[in-house]
Image 1 (tube, one colour):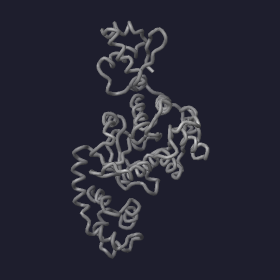
Image 2 (cartoon, rainbow, N blue to C red; image 1 turned 90 degrees about the vertical axis):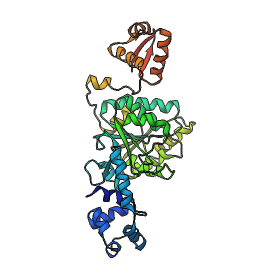
Image 3 (cartoon, rainbow, N blue to C red; image 1 turned 90 degrees about the horizontal axis):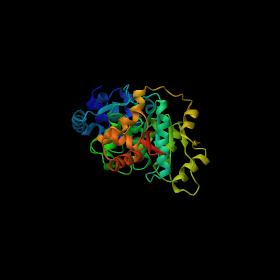
Image 4 (cartoon, one colour; image 1 turned 180 degrees about the horizontal axis):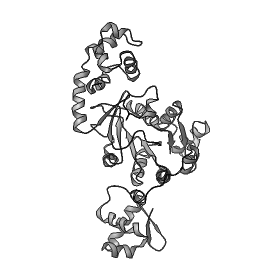
Length: 363
């Protein structure tokens, strides 16, 4: 099947993914759909006169050529739903996209895939849970999927990068832009240990109605969805509901009954829409996962990208043993007053921890 016809099939007005699959079931290939007569098109269930005319007179092929130039220039891989690399879990969902656009290095059919979702207004409690979750999942050979949004989403991605866990961001727009722009550095780092994926073609802006569609991909790509923090209304609960409709496992962290951003999680647990997890290791227990042994090199690789030269020097020294601040000053050749600033930054980013006696060690 030619790429241009595959892309063009998704660019025909009013031809959604379900209709496109009906057409493919009838004609076999995208090329055959575009070569079909009006009478042949009208014989397909769900295809009326207006849709048939839109297929026959669409400018989708010319639009597809423009898309393909962009894809090739930026090394974006189009994944048709019959391709081996297409996410097999997602393919099982009746409303799965016919075509995905993917840029990255991760295997979308990884043996264990977890989606992590939550509020855009993450609290320190939610951020702590993201850190614990990544540190626990590090030993279980998982891939983590989220939506690269503010709050829990981006926190999950960042913690995965720190722990050397591949992580995929599902976008609600085309790959010719990034929303929110503030997460561009994180997105760039994800390309080397994970990736970015979307069903939306070039020039699609992040309109509000795109994000529920994005959420179904997050749910559909995964074995299990974890809701970290969520209010009673929002995308996280929508994703959990979709995951449940796909017969996928859903779990949630409980919170105080008085906390706004735990009310959604508590509701999911109370109504049996989600199982309760008190600690990330509960997830492995429920899923029946055993730890996967990692080499020392892989364990040491679980550090955030984007550290400056001094911070990398500190990390390399601490890989050998825990050290006092005066020993670090000698090892780096930096005054303690200046060194303290770099140590604080590493602590904030969850790379190191200080213990009594002004001693620092890697987490």
